[in-house]
Length: 135
Image (cartoon, rainbow, N blue to C red):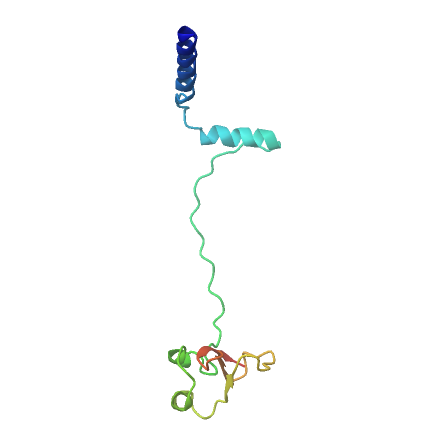
C-alpha cells in the first residue's frame, strides 16, 4: 500500500507541475498580415499603405453677436445669491436699457429668442444664479 500511495502522489505532483508550465511565447502579431487577412475574410480589397495626409483646418464659423443682452458681462455673478445688492450690481453693469428677468425653477419660460436683448438669469432653488441667456 505504501508503494501505491507514493506512486499516486508522484503522478499527481507531475500532473500539477505540467499544468503550471507557461506556454511558449508567441511571436507578436503582424498588423499588416492581420489587416490583409481581415480584408480577405470580408471580401474587400487588400489594404494598401497610404501616405499620411496633412490635417485640414476647417474655416471659422460666421461670427455671431454673442452678448447682445449682456450675458457675457454677468458671468462674474454666476454662483452668487440673487439678493438685492447683487441685483443692483447686475442692473448697474448691464444698464437700465436692457430688461433683466430672474427665472426661478418651475417658472414658465417660453422658448427664448437669442436675438432678443432681454437678459434671463436662471436661478436654482436657493436663488443662486446658475446661467445667463438672452431672450
